[in-house]
Amino acid sequence: MANLLASPRFYKKKSLLIKLETVVGTDAVPTGAANWVEGRNVRITPMQAETAERNIDLPYLGRGGKLQVAQYAQVQFEVALTGPSTGAAGDAPAYAHLLQACGFSQTLTALTDAVYNLASADFKAVSAVINMDGTDHKMIGSRGSVSYQLNAKGIPVMRFQFDAIFVDPAEVVPPAVTTTGWPLEEPVTADNTSPISINGVDLVFSAFSLDLANQLSRINLPGPQKEVAIGDRAPSGSTTVLCPALSVFNPFALAKTGTNVPIQLTHGSAAGKQVQLDANAVITNVDYAEVDKMAAYTLTFEPTPVSGNDEFAHTCL
Image 1 (cartoon, helix red, strand yellow):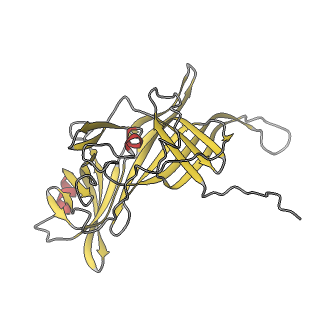
Image 2: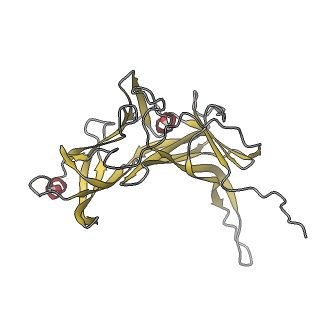
Image 3: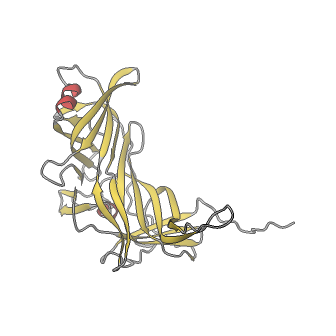
């Protein structure tokens, strides 16, 4: 007997196209030639439905039915943490539009840096097309959140999640994509990565994570008011650092007093490849850990603004 599916579709065969929208909610029409994203571990949830129970009473047991009241789509993926797309300081990284759709503003200074500071208004959005081996899933007005993960001897990544209002999928031939413009990433090592600085003290670290934790509202109100909006953020993070003498670095005192301290690390072997991460944060907990048989602290922290929108910044150098 012949197979029912002569040519099954393959989960691995995906293309991720994303473009910044000029007008939020208007399709930016991303193309494979100009807007391919070097996404890793791409996972799409093509439909997430919100429902209302009908609650009908009947003379027998069983469901009374429900109505779908709204539909959304979500995509999650990782992008390597790299510097400017051109290798020249002052140019934007290839993922700049992704940060902007996660609540960052962009400031480019030629030959110097590209700075991404947090914002509290005028949030941008992106249009995305995810082709799953011949089926297009379109996401318009997408907004999201991002988290960072840097582990020693590993690839540094940003994990993105974007939500959008559901659009019916369509059968479309997978696009031809241009894959240039995404620099080769550098692993987190002694040669490529600076020590982490906490309250002005340089420390050896084995792991660093930070989650921006944007709070996304899925709005569907008569008016109309229909969008995915960033309503707030509650960032948190952790890092594992080797223990110097307590007289050099005392995290217990910092946590006990709730002092807002600067945290900084830089990844990248040279100018044009570097990313600097800065946080103003309160250390909330201190625990012991073991790193290659050496004593270490695992510190949890909460990035907290000092004067507004300054709890975290991402700078390409």
